[in-house]
Length: 455
Image 1 (cartoon, one colour):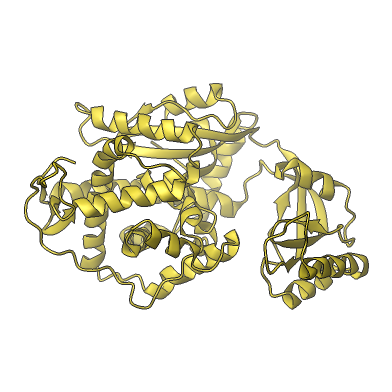
Image 2 (cartoon, helix red, strand yellow):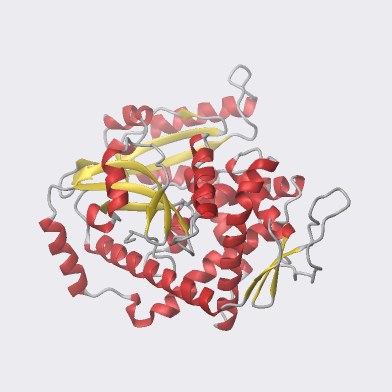
């Protein structure tokens, strides 16, 4: 399947992009300790039933090139998924998840081994920096998720291991690509010419979850798993979180987000579904070469034609020390509102708001990034649509603080026109995914995998 994929580890900034991914949603709030390296897996005896008929947690599920995978590893990952997606992990759901979790963990062990063979080490500082950035962006309390993991009996290393492999695998792919890790001006020009020929056709803003199938003759387990995931998504599980946990495409690092893709970049089976899907719907399982795809459509546009308003903003955020009770605001909250009203009346430039945001501790970034007005939620559109540049908004009160916004610049833009850098990213995304798939197949073909027990 030809996809627009995340170029993690390549020219575009990885940490900024992963912060918006599904990974962000379930790692926010955790700070890693200095001694959080993965614990060595103890050797275990083959699986035998306990006296109550259950399978012991230390029983061996599989041995991958000499590395042990235990029942505890599998169940911890399942509990982590349930916690991050806000699901009630009952026995029936866990039974349906386990076979695919085993497959995913086997692939992760193979990737870990490849990282070791290439002497690739992901420093704890890099993992901690990613999580700290995620924590800031999601405005989560300090250590909230770490405490929740402990309360639910989930090993902290379960989360750390998954993040480490995702980061390290990007470095593996960068090495594997070598000189192909750069796009040339000629390649960009060729893609630009192809887009000109497609002017007027439809592009789709899609997200995906890819579930691979090893043996096309026996895909029943993968189909059942795909149907289980679809059921949970339709019951409210967040798509980015599920993609980050279970998708075997590189887009998992961005919560499954593929970005804007044209029809000739998609499998024909996916195109047929995309044409008929309403925005926000979750597809049924889509059988493609190599596995199943679950897709959701976030929007559509015409290639070459999507005029909109681009806003450059600044904000000052005045935090509350306690959650707001609108019926009984605290003295500190009343004081923050008074200060926000004064700021809104006296700020005359975006530099004024940046200075104010720094004064109040930079709890949120002063520059939230350029935004397309038409894609902002309706309430915020009403506030910003007629706000003149250089004039502060009225104070916007939320449960944990007050924001004052200002439009620095406003311009009309054709959002359907891809810049050379965006085209370069798309070309690299496709190259990265192709390399990842091929290397995964090679690792499995060379591996000695001993499945000891059913899960």
